[in-house]
Length: 95
Image 1 (tube, helix red, strand yellow):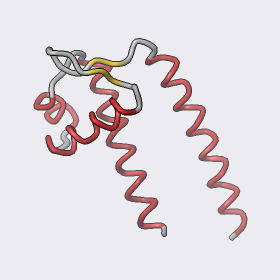
Image 2 (cartoon, rainbow, N blue to C red; image 1 turned 180 degrees about the vertical axis):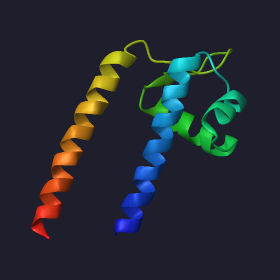
Image 3 (tube, rainbow, N blue to C red; image 1 turned 135 degrees about the horizontal axis):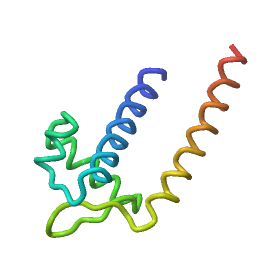
Image 4 (tube, rainbow, N blue to C red; image 1 turned 90 degrees about the horizontal axis):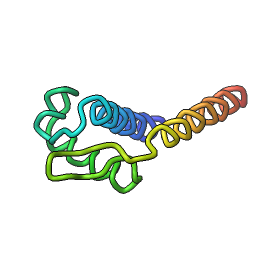
């Protein structure tokens, strides 16, 4: 159970690293994203697909760019992380 959760957290962390690079270097293609993040291209491609599905980035002919309302979306992500931290602390206290 913990291993599965750890793998999911690693994937989410990778997605957030890719998102950060898109925000910082927009527009940016897969090869440059891989170089900037030190993540293998096939994993960058997967992360971009997930970020597109979540409406956080948009593909363009020049490369990926963040969604127009990325600031509000990042605020929501941060609020969700605070809630997750609270939930994890509550689980820890049950043990």
